Image (cartoon, rainbow, N blue to C red; front, side):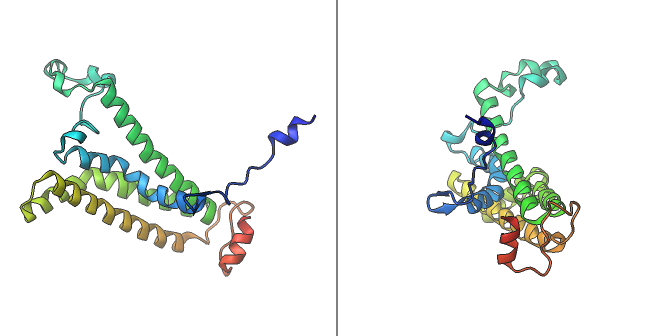
Length: 205
């Protein structure tokens, strides 16, 4: 029995459906939503609801204790438990998985340059911008509206994240239009210029 052909057999997943949705649609939504998993977790943690109190707590992990002052080392409230460390790693891993899915999908569909540019846009929006400004924006909106209840904190935070997801999607769409006809690998990258969607799909298949 020849095991070589069996091991090299291509597994076709493009026709697989989950909840009546094609795999490509699932990957598309996951690649846009998952990168914001940690910001969603932070919003829930800071909402004030007890059930989310330690979901994504800001604390110090064991691996950086050596960089802390003696006063911080003695303050046990700053230290992460094993459970808190695991949750933060798991949530961050989900976010990074979303970024990987996004870059991989756009690279396959549009080429290396579009994949890199759209991935850079996603990193700017989901990591850089959110770390620097999202918390301040949410706080200012709450001050303007004079609200500070847990449910309003969650609602405002999620609305801001949804807007950011939409902005990211629009910017990625623009970048794909700008760079989709630039190629680095003339053999493996798709040629999209002057081709109908049907021809593009035939080429990718």
